[in-house]
Length: 266
Image (cartoon, one colour):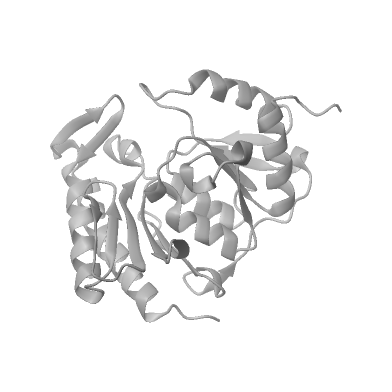
């Protein structure tokens, strides 16, 4: 069994502290003050407080590191080689509707490369963590991507463009192709958890477009350390937000179908 490094231990502790605050706020979700950032894109006091908790804990433990945060933006540190990438509440819309499917996500970048990730499934109290070369873990259990090799047996997950977000027509074209190829498609509303569950083999693949770095930084490390791969769609850099993640065989097949938008002949 691998043990998290001191830095990852700090990341886990910060995620758990934020998760405790989110759990309390989730129980009082109807009383939260909510402001609109855009159509179907909300920011609540819960997001902001959770991010403050994470930032303060990580800053105290690693005072020179830089930060990229969904709510607080970028903050440079004296150490130019390390940066934490934080999504304090991935699945905000679920949270605000009382749907218990949301996460805290913290990634660590070193010299421009994603090297560690922590995703806390707040309501299930599951901590997924990974470090380069150390594997992917759910608490103390080693996680690996699924072993299926046929798309027709695969359960894949995705994100659907929300109100006001471009890409609806392209998504519907891709969905039409994918549903003719796979056993089932699921949509749960938290990219960080979709990636964590793909790393754990619960989903066989995950595809989405238009995500931000804080949505995927931790999850990409989880998938890769679980033996999976992340493929940028149309030869793009996956950290730009358009990608397929999953076990290498199925991810490559799914990306080929999505890019071509042509169902395989049966």
